[in-house]
Image 1 (tube, rainbow, N blue to C red):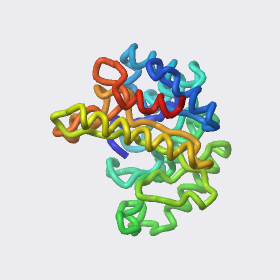
Image 2: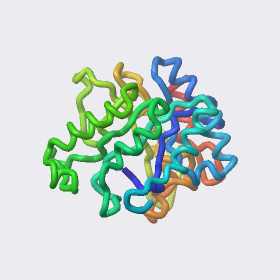
Image 3: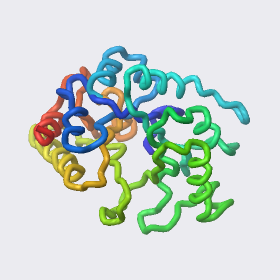
Length: 256
């Protein structure tokens, strides 16, 4: 999980300048093409337009920001994917039962939850976290059972990378999608990014159990890349001025 804010929900919504990519991917048999969003995203009216049309202290839980996002999505008829209930980093030291508390407050409103996030090392072993250290591998079972009890209708996911199993019979969702480009950005690099985005869209379309795609941000100006990787930029489908980039054309072309 890349850091955007203390609360991040994935608004599985189409985008205005995407030439309505969401309806196009639905026409291909998928459920959504969406973007992640946080309260800062909703503060920008132009980003709100894109989302609408194209896409605390210990023992004290404040759901104002999360509720704001869910209410926005509900009013605009969007699917919402919650990210993430349990993560092995970016946690306050006192974390206890937060996953269940968050899930209960939005019961019935969230289409899917990323229940556990990036729990595996590159070699397949479990990452060390407070959950693993105290509960061992059973923390995954516990998290999924509690999430199911809290919201029986939600689709539950492990959100991770490096996993490859199209023959498992399980649904697959592409999440946190962005493709950063090293500076200085050239036309050749933009073409390469265009092709990479196209390949990813084609991969999802070719896998029956791939249900949809979520980009990790709406535009470059609200991406995590610029401040986390200062030598890179232009990871998303719209630039800082909300104009569609070459990558957008690649996505749109595949869906057409």
